[in-house]
Amino acid sequence: MTQDELKKATAIAALEYVEAGIIGVGTGSTANHFIDALAKIKHKIDGAVASSEATAQRLKGHGIEVFELNNVGEMPVYIDGADEITEHMHMIKGGGGALTREKIVAACAKKFVCIADESKLVDRLGKFPLPVEVIPMARSYVARELVRLGGQPKLREGFTTDNGNVILDVHNLDIMNPVELETAINQITGVVTNGLFARRPADIFLMGTPNGVTVIKPS
Ligand code: 5RP
Image (cartoon, rainbow, N blue to C red; front, side, top):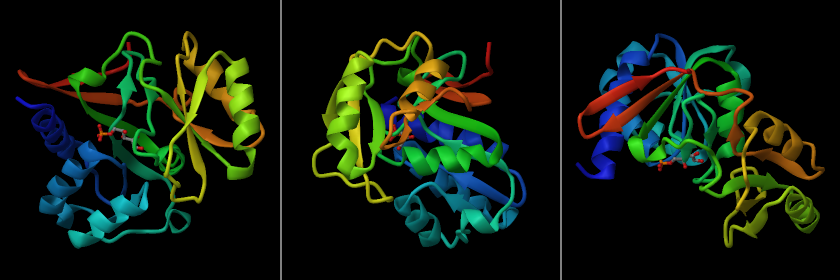
């Protein structure tokens, strides 16, 4: 099976976790497969909150109503992919640049269901460069501070987030303690948010493998 087929399989498996009401929907190629699958059972939900403009467009394209988060209370579930995930359900996200809205929507959901192919499961986070969304005028200052934390930040060239900000992708971070590092990076003035999802980890990981979708819960 190709990686894309594994992504599609885990996205379809996530339909079982869809609950009535309004659900949160992530961003990326795996989330796109989920949106396409969700279209077939859209009568079961009232609509969705999108974690990016791209996701909102795709949901609307399938006739799924998209709600403003401010008009919605707590949601039963948020379903999204990841760039890396550990057995503790800590993740790196933001490869698609939607990390801030993803983290906000996830914060409003009771359950976070991560959908990804098996290549995303890692023993330790950090091989995938950590995305950090930054207010444009703070770019150089934040980059210097990230170097002090041991990373090598690189500006994501030609990319602006849905919030009008830039992304620094931080290479070579040794992420021994994801909760501590997530907090430390968020303390740097000018950082909007970073792609570590450790303070609010996933609750369940549906991992696409050639032998089927494996359900992993935190160890
Ligand atoms: C976007 C994300 C995605 O969930 C992450 O990049 C995984 O993407 P894909 O499903 O395409 O592998 O965090 O900001």
